Image (cartoon, rainbow over all chains, first blue to last red; front, side):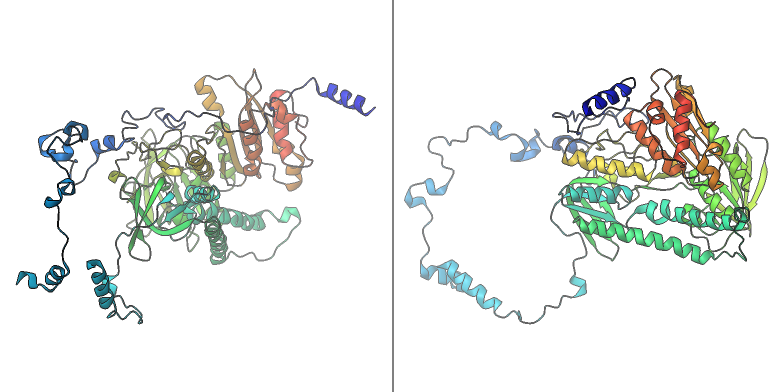
Length: 129
Length: 504
């Protein structure tokens, strides 16, 4: 009886289907395209041509100002040791007979420990008298 | 051994420090320049509707937030000198006007009715202070650090703040949100002094009712303030450059209708008229006006002139140039669809960027911007932002106007229903106005709703919901509405759109 009423009710409404439909709980799409797009209310419907030019630090430096434009020394002679990438400086391993650290040398070339008397002399200034 | 000795010496030296006594630091030595603080997840510049809503939402999302505001109170233009105080004046001036002119035939006879302007302003101030303090409490509740001062970009991640109490600080943020709002557009050659030549800020704080008031600009702000002072006894003339009042977004039929109603209430209109120059050197402020096409010069006089020609984005002192952010030709910060500036971690919402300068639009954007930061996904439907003019009767609309559809060559059908045929409006003796609904003739999908009538600002919420959901006019018409209510006029207009209204 109850089921029949329900069927009748459903039949009565079958002629009209509201255009608003329940889609279920909203979920965030699994993948969202974050590529910059013009704002919907933008009057020009476009982004400036230089948009996104500051997304990297080097791109930012291209137009950044500090007492005028930043100096562009990379790859130039005056840039010194930082002016070229590390790879361009050659291999890291020293060639034969060349040492990077004094402690790698034979013991006689290394720094000798200070004696108590030497420390006292340095601290009191007598060492330089 | 050496290190042991050094430690011993340091200990001896420190023994001479008067560590047991309070340390007195000379004021000259107090550090008043930028100091480092912990990095925030989000730094918001501006504590107006856009800024404070973003701050609360970000706090709710678990972000470490700082909100910088220089006004001294939160809420921005809307709460302090805009929507809220003006609504207080509109409501109370309407009551005053109704008691004076619209009570006898309702069976209410009153004695001597007096206006106490100071008390009217006090009531307005109380609503404002209650709400701004409420917002401050909400920031605290959501763990937002509220910094009172003026923020300025030092670099892409650092904002220097000139504190209101003196001194400076700086705050670092992984993300930064610009929400600095807008300011009144000045009228060239007529300096605003907020006494005789006023902006909307001065219009909510006049100390006496002017005898004659001139309003430059027949948009929403101009008409609301014209209503307030006209009800309180001023002789008001509104000067509008366009041929219609209400601004370009208002449906033409609605604009004509409300102009007639407001004229009947005593407001004079000069549409299609431009203000050529102004002179406030004498006791009376004079405006030289002419027809928009020229050839009909005239001089208008007023005790007070309200400049209400619009608002412009506010970015003064923000230091956008320090980080290379650009504005468009109208001073708006350029953003993409996710509210990012060209420096992606700096976003921007509200009046200072694209879209209509409305508080509720700013709120929507604020929430969406935080969701983009936190979840990578946000939503604002710019085709579905309601507008309300709080005159009496109110005017409200959402979606597209008839003239916009006509211009775009989009086919449409219209259904209207007058409040004079609505039972509740009849019992209230407030029957002016109508509901106008516009729908697609083929699919019946709702395209726009335009209302003039009592409580139109509340009723437009139903139209906005229907439009957002993509409802048909039949969907609205077949939804049961309580009787007797003003909302039945909404249902009947929907019925008139897809078929026929019952009561008209």
